Image (cartoon, rainbow, N blue to C red; front, side, top):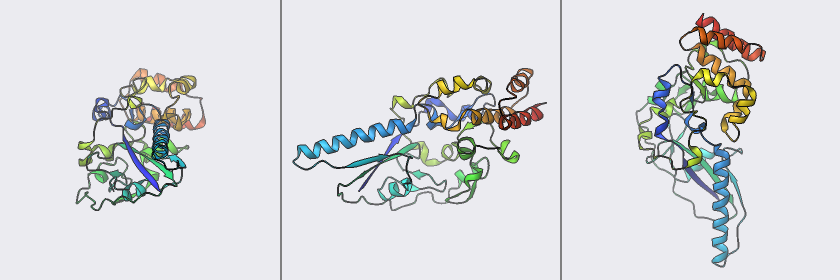
Length: 282
């Protein structure tokens, strides 16, 4: 059996719309502001597994074997969660729940315990709404339920390790790690509950930092301040690349030009994007 669970992470105090509207601020996907969700959820799943096993033993049954996962194995997490009744797959390809929107993580417990199946969510409630597809900055949706990941800002700023195509750079705005636009406009996210998990609270003021402040982090600072954070996935050079693009999409000033020039020489990758920003701002 597969036990599918969700954990809410959204905190309204992070004011995503306000940060997106400020070209001097750095926008990071709201899931990445606190502690790495892999670590948080894996710990909770292991704890739950032990409690279930202990309960079975107390009731005179044998304990059970289990493995836990959260975005860390080739499992069809969204499909399994949909079959488990946790929601439906929306046009933005995310799992939507009528009581929680999409601001949540998924986790699974794989077990040899024979459990009765849950009832799959029967109704897709997106209807004629296409807000998510229309809001995508890079028009990464090729149609309902279809995403071209090569254009997705989340992919570009986190998983993509090379040069970002110039036509896409100016569409990224101030988004330096991930993108939430298709969630922010979804009508169902208005029902998202506030997360009570302290580990998901922002660290190092990442919910309101300026692009210039983050751009001036040394590699040691990056490694120190992203310890235990999902942000480290981008790597230091990816971090600098992304912020250089965001600075190039904002207003120019002598200080910004000076700071951009001061970071030349880190690598060919970062130099390419810094020079692009300098050209746009000069």
